[in-house]
Structures are given as structure tokens and as C-alpha cells.
Length: 584
Image (cartoon, rainbow, N blue to C red; front, top):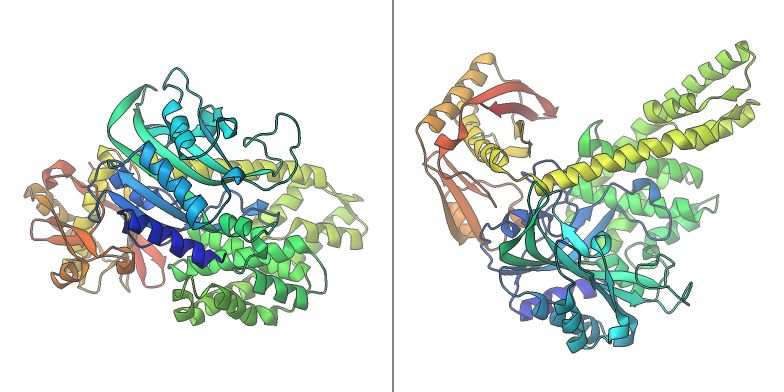
């Protein structure tokens, strides 16, 4: 079964069961506190899981485009992906365990025709904070899973929380038995031997963890589920890896045809990083040296490096992009529309990287000359790492060049430094992810509302051409990107600041309405990414000065915001300016 067929079956199944189909949010999140990319299906729905009313109702389903950056360096093995699609269904205070589990079992066995004997499930074992989840276990038994294929595990395996505090609860996970023999008598779904593959996770959010670590019951119980599309397609097609399914196979075949070195790991890296990069570019991302732009740059440069390892002529890159778009166009027709843009961004970045490699080679020559002058024969780990971090110079290339120059390299020392670098990156990514989900507090809500006022003030002072291009909010400050061709003058900044504070002092009411999307646009409501919104939308108005499509949350009155102060105005990218501001 093709991936597009699984997706369509999923959405139709849950629509038949009373769920509203909502569109995927972009992989570059709008108005998120601190994350670089949309990392999960529930990510854009956090305000509604925390109590905001969703205009499409209490039962929702969608496919969500996701980017996870923690495992970039693992891509190339037989399972890791940076970009993936997550299918999900949600209950916002509607149904709970019984109906969720019944629907999941029905979809797997009736719609996907997975034999019941192929399925095993896990439930929460219970601890001092919450009881053993016998309710889910009994639901699975009634659905058709025998007791011997129901396993219980602790919080590490079967508990989900949005960050360090906030809504949380036990989950139940579904596993597909690949038919491989057990690695031991104790082999079960928690084992990583490959016999059991997780295919779906249903989270039952019925608790709230407080700052002091206590767990209280939520008034609104939610269900949040996630099913990985590529993994499911791989299993249903009887493939060993996602790189063998129709989304990757055409590119993988071309790479094998063009290569002069047979390296399966490099082919996987090229195919995966190309797809991930195209999805980021399609949703507005561009290479840079910071934040998500740096991730995109890293993906494209890693892809280029492995094309070189395969000894594939880089002039083949436009054709390779075309092959990938053709393989994906049924699922993502927007890639066809943006084909020229995608090609130009990727090829420009490839050209820049080739120049970077030239600089790295020159730096390497200096290092060799210095070592020979000092009668040394080994390149130390820090030097190798600096070549990698500063020049993007691949360590294996350093090793090859060193061998040619009759030098050794401290590869073990480099590996240790690189692992330390990876761990810091991983923790940083996790901190951003947790911050984005767990820190929607009073201060963040105030800053979120203030972005609406700032957007409106910029239109008044600079002109109607101003449109929001992105924002980033933490508990300490707000950052707001907007379309404008020139640096703001001191006078313009002061006028904007004064106008925002005038509106704050006026005590304007913040009101909310639900209406059809087209009607909202006719009333002048502004939004980013109109295509991501459902047919019925939520419109927030601040007095008569601001009207925007938005998911919230917001304050009730502008008097709650305090004093607005612009701290910095600077360029963000071509034609886009950035303001950093605080509320005092």
C-alpha cells in the first residue's frame, strides 16, 4: 500500500468517525515560543490541548509535516529520517480511552488489513503518581488483543508530558511484529532488536504536572495520537527500510545509476536530506548561519559532501531534484509549483559550499606546512574539529588528505569531541522542543498579544506593505520579523513604540470570533500561511486596531501588557526586518 493511500484511508476513517480534517501546518512554525521546526502532529495544537477552543470542534484529524533535527547525524542508517509525516487524531475533551483504542484497532485491522496476531501493545505500569492503566489494558482485550501480547512499562516508555510541567498522562503504544525471531526469551516490544516496530502512540492526557513535581487531575481530558506514515508504508510494503518505498526509490535508483563509488549510506543521506531540504525551502526556509537556516545549510552541505563521496557529477543536481519532486508530487503538489525556487536555493548553496571546501583545503595546506616545520607527523583532534566546525570540512576528507601528505590523524580524539558536540546539540534541540510546549505561561501570552499590536503599529507608521514573516517568544522578550525594504529610522521606531503603548494604555478589549475563512479575509483579518487554516477559523480582534487569524492564547485586555519597549531593529534576511522588544 502506497503512502498516499495510507494517508487518505486514515483521514477518511476518522472523518467517518466524526473528526474534522484540518490542514497540515508548515514545517516552519508560526508564533511558537522557541522551536525551530514543527516536530510533531500535536505541536501546532498545543493551545487547544491547553484549553483554547478549536474552531473545527472537539474531534480533529490531519497529516502533519514534521522536521526533527536531533538525529541528523544518524541519517544514513536503515531507519532515521529528518523529515517525516505524522498522521494524528485528537479528542479535545471529547472521547477518551475506550473509543480511542477501539478506533485504533479497527483502523489497523480493518482498513490496513493488518492481522491481529501481528499486533502487540504496551500500557503504563503505574507508580506513586498515577495508577496502573488497567482501563487501557481491558479496552485492548475487548478490542481483540490477548493478554499475553499486552505489556506494562513505566514512565520512560509509557508516559508523555509537554515539557517539564503541564498536561501529561499515560500512553498506550502499538507494535507490529515483523516476524523476525526473538533475540532472547525476554524479547518484547521494549527491545530494540528489530522484531517489534512501534507504529502508533495514543496519549491520554488526564493529569497536569505542577512546578513542584506534583500531579493533579485535568478538567479537560484529551487524546493525542501519532502514527508515522513512512514507517507504516515500509511495513505494509514488506520493505526493510523507508528508503525502499516509492517516496525514495526513484532517487535511490538514480543515485545508484550515477555513482562511481557504491556507498548505500551515502545514497540514503543524499535522498533523505534532499527531501527534507525541499520541504523546508517550500515552507519558507532559507540557508543561513543561525537557527533553522543553519539546519537547512547543514542538510544541504551534508548532502553535497555525500554526492562527492559517491563521485556523482554535481551537474546532475537539477535532474535529481526533478526526480524527487516527481516521486513526491502526489503527496505534496506544492513542490511542483515551487520547483524553480527549490532548485535555485539548493544549487546556490551547493556552489557556496564548494567555495567553502576550497577555503578548507587552503587552511589544511597551512596546517601541513606548520606541522612539517615543527617535525610533527600527527594532526590533533582539535585541529580536525576546527576544520569541520569552521569550514564545514569533512573529517574523512581531512583523513584522506593527511594520508596523501604522510600524516596521521587523531581520529579517536576527534570522535570524542564530535560526540560531545552532538550531545550539546541534542540537548539544545530538546530544550527548545520542551520550551515550546511547556512554557505557555502568562508572560508568553502577554508577548504573543503584543505581537499583534506591533504588527498593527508597523502598518500605520511604515505602510500597508508590512506583513508578519515570523516571530519568536520567550519569557524574557519577543522577536518579530516583518516585510520592509529599509532600516527603520530612530523616529519611526519611536513612533511605533509610542503607538503600541497608546493602545496598551487605552485598555482595548481582546475579542474572539469564529467564522468561515473566506468571510474572515473579507473583513480584513490578516494571517500567515492562509492554506494551513481550516474552513472555520478563529479571529482575534484588539479594539478596532488589529484583526488577525490566530490560534491564541491572548490576554483579555491590553492593560495587562505593561510598557512596550523596542530594544533592537535589524535585518533578518533580504527584504525582511527584525524587531526585538520587551514588556516592562
